[in-house]
Length: 326
Image (cartoon, rainbow, N blue to C red; front, side):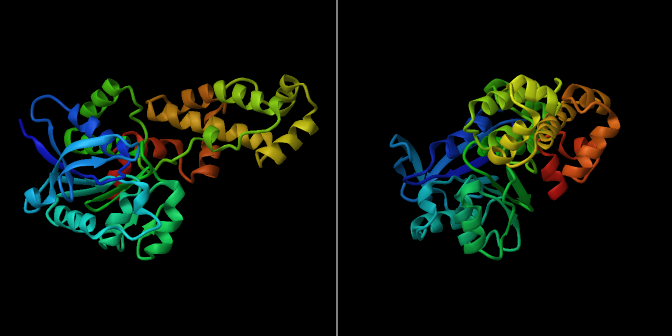
């Protein structure tokens, strides 16, 4: 079996899922010519205290592995990396690990460590949505992509917040061992495989402000649950028990758009998912509620600037965005 070595750099205050998520993905890769050897590394070794207060024991001191060339180094994140100077022992440990690494990755605010070392200068990168502006202001030589789940530029991969570390690790598995291996791990962990790096950190539903009006809240839930149903403005107004004029006013005040535009975005998101699951353009148009191939193409062009077929080609796998970017 060919085992790839992975070091995950942790520290007091590390977000537990930033380290555990990628580790869990990688340790589930099994089979001929597959597998990863994972080492949790810290500046001093021994126990570190995670952001939850729970301890992470048995970490390896950087002094024991500083001359080792790992295939992949993952720098986990934590709130203490933002808004204050990063401790020199952590930076020194990261510098030692990354200087010999074949591939360098960060989860969430771990990007700030890479940026402080200059490893992101002249590269595209991302981090948790809450901290992208801080990263951009603090490190102007980094081309920050504010809404990507993960971004690869050369041998460096940065990911968005917390759970995006799972997406990043699945993409690495696919890059190393192929789509079938990544799919098997995703199925085992009961997580979605199809979250390519270039996708948004947010779905339309989760990025929509929560309406204060209970009628509008129920209506948005109904549309999100069944985008392909009859959701014209008159039908939605009847469902909500209000006039079309009042419904339009509620959408403008609480959602910031018109009913038709919001429904179109919900349907577009479903069509994107269907295309990534190998549904045909015609089937995606019909099942999403967009209706015809031509309508689907117009909506894709208006919102994404590409055709449905090009979207599927670019993002069919987790690694599609990595291949396009690399």
